[in-house]
Image (tube, rainbow, N blue to C red; front, side, top):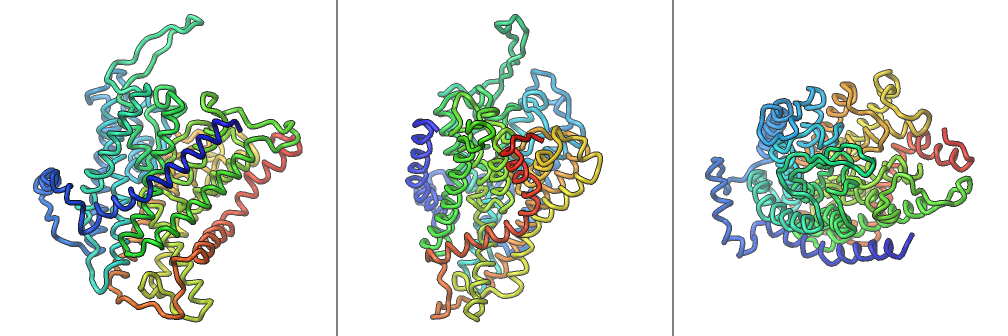
Length: 563
């Protein structure tokens, strides 16, 4: 790596450690019962939205009402987006005269953006009009991210409250998150990106002649606004087909650094917000520390593997497929950041990385996107592992496990196990189905272990609501569009619904004062045990599949074999 790569990584780490804690406190105040007094100056906008929608912001919901509102909202958003995708040829702001998507692609895309996955089996500038990008995809980038934060807030209330059925109001959580967090941050990031040359206009595609005399269409569009929220909201995707490797989407080294910082900012802040909301800030810091250490270990391993560790290749670095404008270090940093945050955006080809680096990116997703994860989604996924960890600790000392003053009993563990294992089942079973059918293997660009990695990564991305692509797999077929769409739904709601059920159960429980037998959850020992639990569950579940894919490919590459 070059000195610029070390400077980028060091600056990013320092910026996150500096900004994430106050951002977490701010988020907690927005979602808490005592928001900042200065927010009252713009409260008329919030109240106006409630009046327009017929919502009583003072009415609390139990977990069933909260879940019902969330499912109704998500279902309506899916149908609205599906209609836009199918009918975009007849809608305004379509200067390129792009036709409507096929049904299988449209339903896949609609599910993808509603579930915060943003998997794209299409090229943005060729398949989506400006209207679709803004009113359809861009709006869902805000809504799906805010939905994840709302669920995290409900879970935090369930842990903080006692002997009540109420866990908050979904509509209030949604509106406040968008108004006071996502919208203002997106405006700031969009302005910074525009200053670097990211396009933001409604011009028709431009005709240009290259130096070789070849005619070429230059895509335009309102890209900066969508890129800002796709990074902040852990949405991923891209306005253009090659995502953040496109010079109109990521033109400079500064825009590259800003986009990486934006994708990590809120996921890093949420653990601090969680600690504030549950009344145990030290525990929030332990959760952040666990996530941060796992992130740094993943990044360090990937940088080492990419810098040249294969003797058969003359110890040369893996340059092919990297973004040459930013270098190997910046491309590798983005690959790790986008897979630990369920962001899914890319600025280089993950398939071109060393096999084990691709395996690391895949494993980051397979762990349940709990190393930061999506905004809100990562922390409530982490809490599921926390419940398993305190259960194990309880077995060690022979006591009923406790977490933040709540006894964790059989029903809570059952729901936690469902939330942890549901995405795992999607990855392994759906990948097996793809490997067994002609419709699945006919889309591969490579045979052998690399082809298996393409399939494993695609379904990991779907089940983990990540959205990044390994590359090489032609996923725009009815088989993959429908099967991956189903996987995205399971990956989102088979985790989200158990979390809300847990929030309801925990809110009803009494608070149990800590005793000498209580395993503290604000210690380094707990962080180490939590990390071990995550790695053991992930390792036992996915190690056989990873062995047949990236691990075998790395061993073959060491022998100079490329099959």
